[in-house]
Length: 282
Image (cartoon, rainbow, N blue to C red; front, side):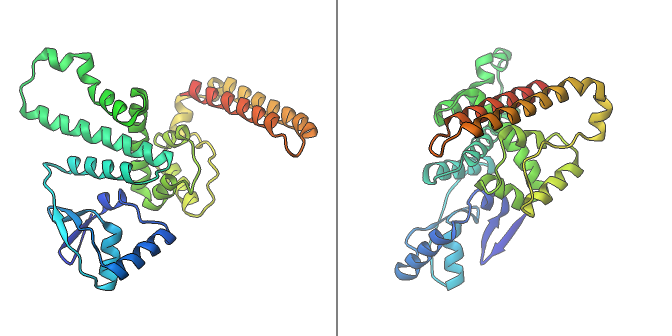
């Protein structure tokens, strides 16, 4: 979706990657522009705003003149990568935002490669070379100082967030900014449930009622996985919860005001057990 304002195009996909500032930071920027003018040019690609959304918003509201500079890119994917690189270098991002950007970067690179492959002649050896097929993940892992597996997982996380964004951009925004606390495992799981369950979860997020519960098993899942096959997992979960309750009561009775180490150990152990159970159920 694109919106044209005074010959500058606001592209919704790109605007989402240029998050609005928090109230205080936006106010300080507004005061600075009102006092000194808009000193930095807005960056455009084919008339689309790709950098300077907050400055553009302030200048448009107060009728303050601004300058623009145009950049050349061969595709939207190249623009997206440029925006991501800018945001990662400039902002203090949440871990979820960083993962999202890394995943989007990986996906954009792969789309560019796929387009190029349609018009280039490559040898069968090059196409089947293991290192070649994984070179994008390897290169981005080195660039972002993470593992190759992290880049691959980030791509899956980006898919899940995009799926949620199709139902609600506000829910997606709350997850990325950390307003809604949700684990990466939990987030990825949302991409595989039914649309009705996604809509219900999105509604809870928008209304501030989301508690991070595991998604309900859909009817299709119930048919493919009858109750007797999931019974061992249910028993294991019940054991973990029972052990936690027992250990919690014991620790609580011994806990002093300034000593939370024992409680943290109990919590860490329980979290590890739950994560292991979750992984085994995938």
